[in-house]
Length: 308
Image (cartoon, rainbow, N blue to C red; front, side, top):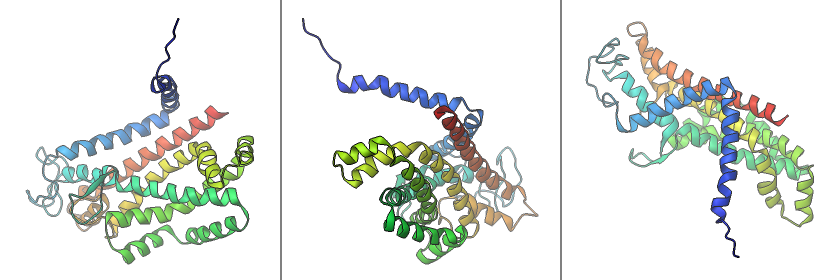
């Protein structure tokens, strides 16, 4: 009698489904996380819709300037006669959905500027932090002293130095978010690594003769992924706020894509004649940041409770 075994990819599916169910259970067990996730999904949906449709072309000057909300323009128009709601919809793409790598607007990659900036901060900060925490000694001292020097500078000053020195552009803003965020990630990962490296499975890997890079990348970092993931979500909120701040200062993303921060900067000149024009992009920034922070906070609370 012969027996058949399922292919490995089929055998692994129940385990993956169980992990997915556990992750969803953690998310939906927190009202805070659910509210934050709903806000984020709303803006993601708006961004996806804007890839294919907006009420009017975001950069087209089709109407009279500074019109109040109406059936034709649900959020009114800006100082150039452009539909405000269409521009807010398109602004979601820049933050969450797409990044331009060149001056040609057709050259884009999936993922918004905030997402790639946080990914860069996590990669750079994670590698520096795990090296400092695992190696210790002189390596730890040198890495952390350099990072502490960056932390000593106010974040807005670092943003201004990087952007004014290198110019405007999506990649430059990503670099600015990476540089300012990496020291904080490194400090978090260093602390986690110093705890994890005392565990028996790290000693077992070292006894097997595994290299330091193997132990750091395959034994240490995967076991620190929970706190790193939550911290990364919080940093997405910081990155969104940073993009808005740079746009408000006139150092954000260049045209033609609408930028919520630059929309606020343009509208403030007409705050007395058209106060709603400054309100809408400000609310967009605030609600998206609040949504990301609520989701991360709720997830952190549930993960902490789940692990007890």
